[in-house]
Length: 126
Image (cartoon, rainbow, N blue to C red):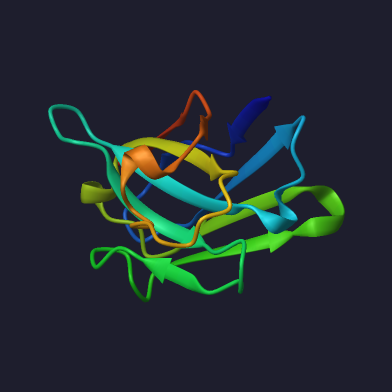
């Protein structure tokens, strides 16, 4: 299994980026997929999640109203649309996939996920 993120880069404050996550060896349409991020010197935090059970979406408090997670099952992709970016959004963004079938878990707990990508850097700066 390989998880690959793409779409990171340098953007000015107020700008937008769309991150993409794809997987080889997995079909993402029935898995719970989340985006996490880690800024220098900080712990990895959950940003957004889409449930594999009922497609409910969850967002971290700091990104609500600005970020949107979505799936394209035909392309086996999960996206993170990031709008109104702020300098505090600067971090390495990781895609994580949960394949376990149990439903009792914290969607933003690192240990809840079975597969991780290598991350993509997002830098928000003028």
